[in-house]
Image 1 (cartoon, helix red, strand yellow):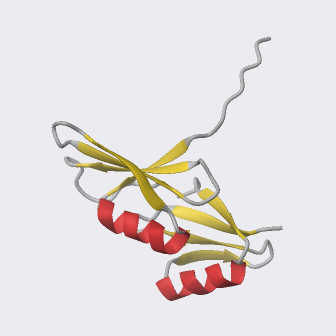
Image 2 (cartoon, rainbow, N blue to C red):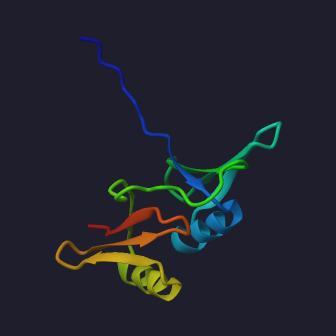
Length: 125
């Protein structure tokens, strides 16, 4: 058996309004744009965001010819982030109005972005 190591690099979310989404992720999760790829023909833009202390990136894809909202199905897929200041994060997200689901029994909650994608917020142990 061949053993090959892999490392997660990025995950993609397609967005309707790229700048609105970049602003949301900057405000909600402290992510900053670190790289951008513009298609020569203008058909798409890829914006790569990352936060401090992690090499993992969130790739936001804007497609020129896409019309309308994306169908996220039952929205069972999500990203998860951990924070050392859960109370401050919870207060920020409450103020932003982006908390979409809470599970007090598990000590977690979820936020949703302008396109409806969910991100799980987990307190650091």
